[in-house]
Length: 103
Image (cartoon, rainbow, N blue to C red; front, side, top):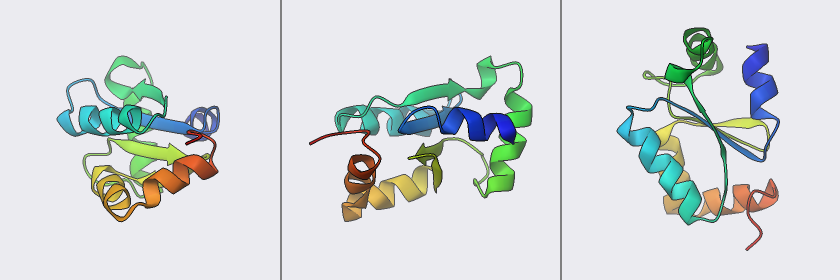
């Protein structure tokens, strides 16, 4: 859990993913299209990935635990949540408030 906290606070936007996850790819693409440059942590390529995945589930991440998105050091949700925030316009504001984007 501490590693998740540490990694999620190092950059304004952080996404925990798996390289084979299509929804992870979609969420990363959305962030890039919004002008953000999130830190990406692929759990399947990290030696502590399984432990981190358990920690993400403990935070309330759905099953599967990825993508798990943090903005401003705060867990904001998984793919379903991020899409909802994008549709209602609040994702862009969250990214602005966290200084992940400027426009």
